[in-house]
Image 1 (tube, rainbow, N blue to C red):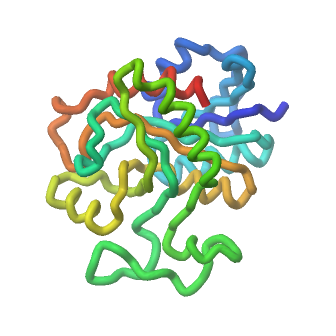
Image 2: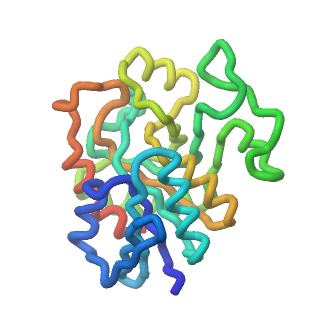
Amino acid sequence: MNPDLLILCATDFEIAHFLTLHPGDSKRLTKTGLTIISGKVHHQTYDLMVTGLGVFNAAHALTAYLEQFSPSLILQTGIAGVFKQTGLNIGDMAIATQEHYIHTGIQTDNLENTPLPFDLIENNSLSRKGIYPFEQDRVDHTHEILSQALPTHKINIIKGPFITVSSITSSFEQANRLYTTFSPVMEAMEGAASAHIAALYSIPMIEIRSASNFVGERDKSKWDIDLAAKQLGWVCALI
């Protein structure tokens, strides 16, 4: 049966708190051993997949799933690095207005590439630069719902562009360059891949992440993965 919601997350620990609050009723495996957990949140049915880290794992997992099922909505979620310039703190949340796989295109002397001379998705010129906008009305509606719920928990939430990378930014100097070039809210490693596959199958998608660290901070003692995962757990139930 096709669920109302497909939840995608890169790792088990990022989504563990959600599953504690809303454990699944059943499990099944894909041909490559990925687990699909099925359950219910309030009035909605959900399937959940832990995809593994990075664009290749995300693309594979979502493709394998969508060859069998057609959810009403895909939720890409997880923890992420947040850019200091946004004013968000660790534990705060963001909703993506678009995803950008910044390694797509023709290399220039700057961080931003020029477009490829061909579409990566037919009749989608933005795919030439790895840019995937999300449906604005859905983003705005989700932001409104969460904005009403989160202040009581002292969590801030904003909406804005995300970037997807295949190498984690390891210095504040590089983080500043990325922010100057792309003005992103968050940096993660799967969103653009999922957005690309979702577009191919014409399934709507939204991406919500919780900040576990500041982009460029490599001292993991200053990260708070547990807090970010906990915030994520109950936020996913509000979608």
